[in-house]
Image 1 (tube, one colour):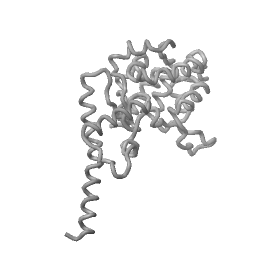
Image 2 (tube, rainbow, N blue to C red):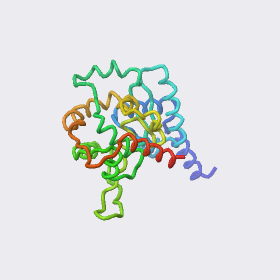
Image 3 (cartoon, helix red, strand yellow):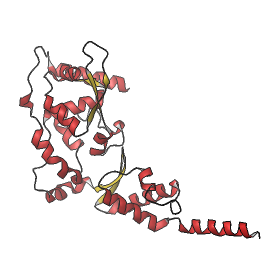
Length: 250
């Protein structure tokens, strides 16, 4: 055999042998997801490895699938969200895990729930359109709080006098509530009563500690909002809005 070809073959064999795979790959991915404290995309996971040890993308996907299956009998689960994958506490264990933090349980005001729900389901939407549906003015504190948490952002401006800002949700909003995309949101029928939106969209315990002070520190209550001059029948407006959104979705 040509010496040059022999050397190249030996180098190729060494590269193949150095590729991380199997159980070692799965353990590295698990350790990275546990340490990250935030979702990691497949690109970020692949970047953990040097060129000569990086496994093919298919191997990473296979290892993640195996890791997810192994979590079935454990207290944590591998969750795919908008930004990638993360290891998180299973929902049924939240009651006990949340006791690790001394802060008050996470609570949302009805005003904030209604505002974020309307933005999520009707985006892009203006502040004025939110007010016309809810029948009350939208507190500036609510908009500011949602923007500071990076749950909503300005995605454009309505082409009408005044050029009002159009709001939409962000990938951080999806990550915070364990969603891959907007199709994973509860149906409108499920959130007909805003009181059940909170358990439907509940932060994972590992993210509650960082958010709890924010929620209680600058959030506003329904009392901070004032009725519009001519809100009409609020329930009728909400019913019409829900029907219009359902018609658009179908």
